[in-house]
Image (cartoon, rainbow, N blue to C red):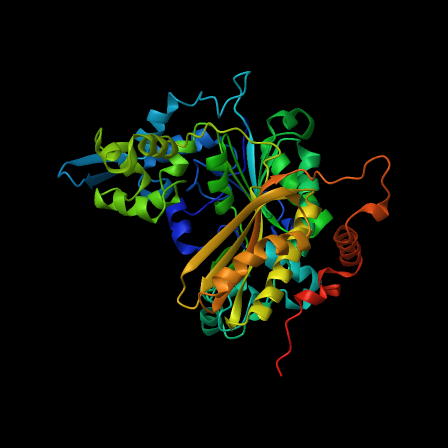
Length: 518
C-alpha cells in the first residue's frame, strides 16, 4: 500500500474502544451509508498517523508517524512518554511506548501471513455490516430510521439480539436482558428477529464480496475477510477497493458497512472496529467508514489496546494476566522472560506475544464451512407440559431443517438443548443413521431426549442444533419417480417454496402450533 493517503484526526485506539458500547459475537452495530460522509475522503483514516491535524494529506503514513514521534504525541497517548510497569514478582520496567514495539516488529514483518510469494504485503479487508439485523429490519420499516430500535424478544425473559446506535446511546447492547433494555430506553421499538430474512440478505452481501475477489472467508452473517491482494491490478489501491465494497453493498443491498484494511486478519478486524459509527451520549456520529493500517504500522496500531482486545483473552486468561500486572498490550511485550509462560502456558504466551506485535500468519480460508446450525428460544413462562414442549420442538426443528436445505447441507448429529427454571443447562446429542435435513427426522431423533429432560422439571429454554454437516446423500435413482420419495421430503419442499414466495411466517406446521389453553 504505497503512495499518499488522506490522513484524518482519528481518536486514539484505546479511547475509542472504551467509549463504544459492547457488542456480541455477531458484531451487531448500526450502519451509515457511504454518501453520509462529505466528499474528499472523510471515510478513511490511516493508522500510524492517528493524531495528525485534519487537512494534512501530503505525507505518507510512515512519515506522519515519524514526525509525531519527534513531537512526543501519538496513538494511545503513550508515544514519547515514560511508562513504568510493575509485575507480580516485584520487578518493574520503565519504557518508552510504543516506538520500541514497532522497532521490534520491524524485523519480523516478512512473516508468511503478511507477505505474498513475491514479497509484497498482503491486502486483507475485514468487512463488517453495520448493525446488520437492525439495518435489515429498517429496509422493511423505513419509518423507524433514526429511532432506537431493538431486535429481540420484549417479554420478561427476552434477550436483545441487536440494537441500533440510537438505542446504544442509552446503554442498550446485544445479549442484554430485554427488561433491562426497556428500562434504559423506554422509547425503544422492539422487533422480533427474522433469521431467515437475515440469511437471505447475507447471501446478497456475499455475492458482492464474490464479485470483488474469490478469496472470501465468512465469519458470520454480517462479516467476512476478503483477500484482495490479487485484485489490485484490476481494481486499484486498497483504499479504492474498500470504497468500492462499501458503495456496492449500499447500492445493491441498501445497507452500510465498515471496512478495516491491513496486511493480516487480526489487525484488519481491529481496524474495522475503528471505522464504525459511534454512539455517544450527545448523538450518533458517522464513522470513518474505512480505516487503513499501513504496512509496518501494525505494532503501533495494536499498542494502544487493552489486553482483552487480543484474540484468545477470555475472562479466565484476563484474570491471570491482571494477576501479574499485565493490563495493556505493551505489558505483554515487556514482560520478563518466562513470566507470561509460567502463568498462561508456553503456547498461549507465544500466541499473545505475536498478536501484541501485530503479527498474524493465518491466510484467508475460502469456503469455510459452517460447523453447526441451530435455533433456540427462551419461553415467556416455564414450559411444564410435554405437549407444549413437543410443539416447540417441532417449530425449532422446522427452522433448523429449512436452514440446512437452504445451505444444501445435511446433519449427521442433532442436539437438544434444555435450560431449566434454576438455569441449569443440559444437552443431548444423537448421531444415528443417514444425514438428515427434514423436520420430521429431527423430531423423531430428539423426541426421546425431550421426554427425558422434561421428566426433570419445567423448561425455561429449548434449543435444537445440527452439526457434523455434510452434503445431502438422499437422491432419486434413475428408475425412481418423485412420488417414490418419502412424504416428508415433498412436504418440506412445498413449505420451502411457499415461504420463499410469501415469507417465512406465511405457513407453519400444524404440529408446531401451541395447544390452546382451555
